[in-house]
Length: 232
Ligand SMILES: [Zn+2]
Image (tube, rainbow, N blue to C red; front, top):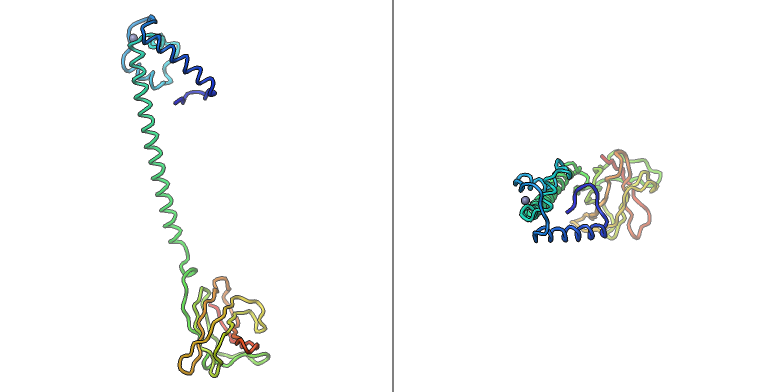
């Protein structure tokens, strides 16, 4: 692993290591003549780690490069250093992974905690129109109005007295001409004694709070029946 100064090209790298290897072989075979005394362990260790404070002009570097004893010790230390560095690198990678995992878990926890639960929860609601009059065409509106929350609603509508069984289209609109559609769904009636009920899901999360109209249209009667509706 080369961590110093610059990264040589592949070809240069190969040539350099070939030269170094040839040199090492000669030194270890005792073909060179070292100058000066043998080196202490501390200096060899610094050299193995390529410590920056060692100047290449230092005569001890020259000794290490030509002494079979010092060179073999240096090679050993370099191997140890590489191994240690790899282990540190592995540990660092492991720590980074663990940190990432912690970040992901914390982020998820924070997001879940901050998510408005009312936005995703389905609210079950019953709208009883059994005794309600309707607003049809030009007739005046009823004083009594029903209300639904601005949420995902699972609504059960008890249809007015004498309502026909069958498939109904349920819609929520801004006005009683069917304009400004907020949500619509179809549902088939289920009889409960004299009553006809329909149950369906309406997504009212995007509806602003205010007055609306709830309409029901029977499949065989194209006229829609409108009821005043308050979204809260
Ligand atoms: Zn030596």
